[in-house]
Image 1: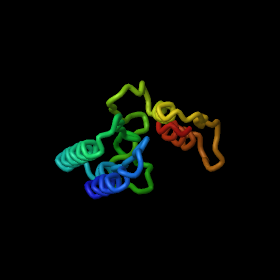
Image 2 (image 1 turned 60 degrees about the vertical axis):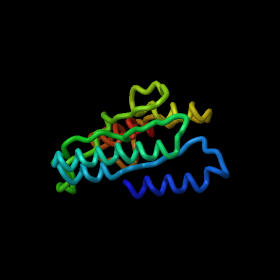
Image 3 (image 1 turned 90 degrees about the vertical axis):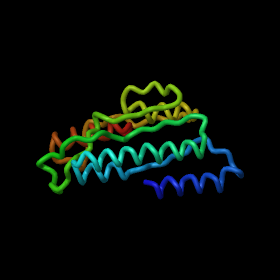
Length: 155
């Protein structure tokens, strides 16, 4: 996470004198990997402290007009039905967190994409939930896939 943040700031500092950015995007996925691998609360706490520090350093370095920090999902204990049973935690698309320096009027993760498009004054239709998919073999799998996509703002 630190290396990604440092590279982001480095690239920003190299290019910002030549151009003014409307939006920047940085993904720090280390916490996701850690949550899949352990339930050790001290390791998880250290990861949260690291991501908080790294996020603060990037925001301080870039000094944006508006900042939106969000997770793409929460976490829950992994299902016994996972093919990779060594996973400790799995994605929970009904949860997640966000915070912003301006009001984005977010109530659910499905509000994120339309809010960002609106903020950037981009007029396009956000895909809606479908009734079925060709690749799904059961109603349960179909429901889980749509739940994940819907909460991410893609379905």
